[in-house]
Amino acid sequence: MKVALTGATGRVGHAIAAHLTARGDKVTTLGRRPLPGMAHVTWDLTQPPPDLTGQDALIHAAFAHVPGKYRGGEGDDPDAFRSQNVDGTLRLFARAAQDGVTRIVFLSSRAVYDGYPAGSVLQDGLPARPDSLYGIAKAKVEDWLAARPGLATASLRATGVYGPGAPGQPHKWADLFAAYARGDTPAPRVGSEVHADDLAAAARLLLTAPAADLAPATFNLSDILLDHRDLLATYADLTGIQRPLPPRADASRVSVMQCDRLRALGWQPRGMAGLRPAIADLIA
Image (cartoon, rainbow, N blue to C red; front, side, top):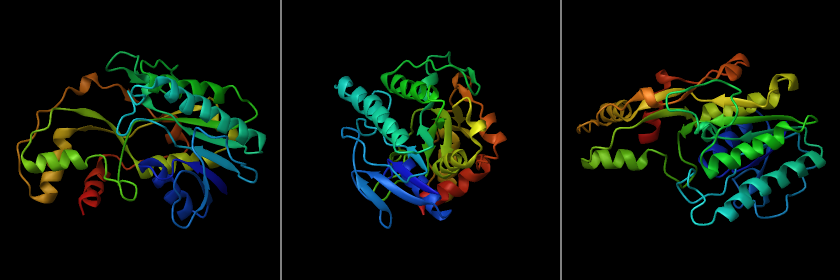
């Protein structure tokens, strides 16, 4: 399969590129920087989209934001944020359709659910109810895709993503682990997570599933509910660094996504059993 991929130098996009390549797909990356060994087209969300003729599918994982922030990622320039992440994305998708790309997978976010009460059970297919510009941007793109019956499309409403950083970048818990090792006691926190490799597996699954199984076009993507107390206890056990652990956070206020549609297609994330080896990989 020939797949065009944006955002390939980020944590999520890098994992997707590696997953596709390992399965024999031919990946062309679209972005500012190439990945070694892959075809590349220099492009960003401010520019006219490149020619996508000959590509079977497009996975769009790129997102323009203030470094380290998604909610609030517009910084002090919401107009540029909207222009790139909504208008730029829709130009890319329109070009893909024009050039004969028949399947598009869009990396959306659980932020489209932020307007629901804390502790809600978020089933597949719930209407978007964002309360941040980040969530609004993702929801607008989802709506555009869902209104294109001639395309096979899927929007992955992904939770927080953990796993190795992209080349030259730290993993998401690097600062947390370093602070704990120094003797700081982090604040209580609990949230939902999915490993980047499991997200990549879900994205490829949506490239190969029957087109009829992609309707409706949104899919929840989440795996584990992780308390920082448990995360740091595992880190401490693996490293021998013993420091006070934060109190357990109130998990009842976390809105947990059900992922029945992906699981029905055969998606099997690693779960809590895979957390310890994943952390061992991060600190190796």
